[in-house]
Structures are given as structure tokens and as C-alpha cells.
Length: 252
Ligand code: COA
Image (tube, rainbow, N blue to C red):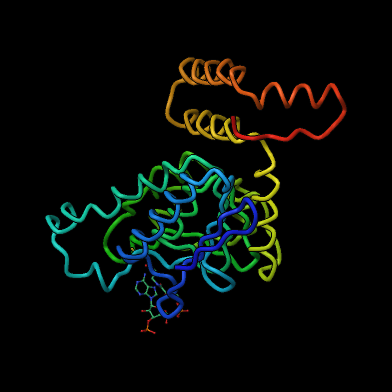
């Protein structure tokens, strides 16, 4: 995996091209560590997750998994550890070129925004291996695109194109593959200009909408809204608006 910083944007690039970025336990552990380090670093305000120009990730490492028993799976609890990635508190932008399959697709679905190259293909082919997704595929697809497309993808196993994903609201933008990562960096850099605490609570509130009944979700939103009036950034943001200048947010 490659980790780099571009101003306030952290960038993680999955880098196992020989196996199409198959997600081995070691790679997932590295990814968790990199995101935890970005989370702890106040200079990093948003992050991009990509597999580079050709492929995002072709799923869990089948070679690593083929002979495992249920007890092996339970003890390694590989997908349970993905909770650490979902817990990343800053905006996480997926830049997807080529295949995002199986765990690769589930990884993209954990991200907050998805920029897709026109070469991108999203799918859950686990059914073709005699299994089902284990890191959110059967749960995040229906919450994103509804039951019927989720059934098609999870039961049929065939991937969908970037364009169809865009029409379904699964991705934010489709761009030429050669600029996917640059555009995702730009999107992240724009978000990195916003007030960090407000970003964090906006992300948390939207994610709660997928978990909670409306009344409880609205209560979470309202409390987060009130809380933000305790931040210096709220004072700065509103003062800057009234003084017709650009706000300088400090994450306090
Ligand atoms: N785990 C382990 N290795 C993988 C892999 C995975 N998920 N996906 C691809 N690879 C390996 C292939 O075995 C091959 O290795 P080799 O060169 O040593 O034979 C290499 O990556 C290139 O893949 P290949 O199948 O030759 O490329 P392709 O362009 O013909 O097909 C895919 C690309 C993605 C359609 C095909 O590799 C595929 O179906 N992969 C599995 C996807 C999947 O089922 N994911 C869910 C896993 S739970």
C-alpha cells in the first residue's frame, strides 16, 4: 500500500497490481492503520482511497481464503475488522478505476463519496464462488440502490458499469479514467477547506440516517447542530460571512 499526503488530503493507494489489489488480511491491516493515522493527524482533513489507474480491488484474496474453516474465519474475523475503516471520522473519497468487486466493492461502499472512472465496474461476484458477501454487500447495496438492484447484483453476480452506477446514485461522478484520482483529490481538497468538526458531525449524522428511525435520526442531527454552536469555527464561519471574507477554520 502507498500512503501519501497532499496538503490537507491523505491519499492511500492499494498496491498489489499482480493480483488486482486483492484484499489480503495484511493489506486490510495496513489500510486500517493508515486511516487511523490520518484520523489522529489534525493536519489531515479528508482522505482519498484508490487502487490507482487500472483497478480498485478485485475482492478478498481467494487464494488466502479457499481452504479456511468457519472457525478459521471466526477467529480471524477479517471482515469484523472492517468496522475500523467504517469508523474513520473524516470525509473518505473513493477513486475507482476498473474492477471494484466483492470486498473491493464493499470497501468503496464504506466511503463517503465515490468518483468513478468510466472503466469502473461494481459488483458482488461472491455467489459465483458459492458464498455471499461478508463485509456489507447485502446490506449497503439495498440501502443505496433499493432491493431489486441489490438482489440482481448479489444473486446474479454480474458487475454493473460506472454509468449505470451513476444513474442508480451509487457514485457521485463518472470521469475519464485517467483523471479519476486527480478529481477525487480535488473533491477531497474542497472538503478539507470546510470546518473539521462540522464535517465530522455531518458525516456522523448522515450515516445515522441509515441506522435509525426518522425521529431518532432527527434528534441526533439536532444535538449535533446545537453542539456546533460551542465551536470557534461556528463563530468564525458566521463572522466571516457577515464581514464578507473567507472563513479560516481551525477545527476548534
Ligand atoms: N483473489 C486472489 N487473486 C485474484 C483475485 C482475488 N480476488 N482476483 C484476481 N486475482 C488474480 C488472478 O488469480 C490472476 O493471478 P495469476 O496471474 O497469478 O493467474 C491475477 O489476479 C489477474 O487476474 P485475471 O483473472 O487473470 O484477470 P482478468 O482480467 O482475466 O479478470 C477479474 C479479472 C476481476 C474478472 C477476475 O480476476 C475475477 O473474477 N476475480 C475474482 C473476483 C471475485 O470473485 N471477487 C470476490 C472474492 S470473495
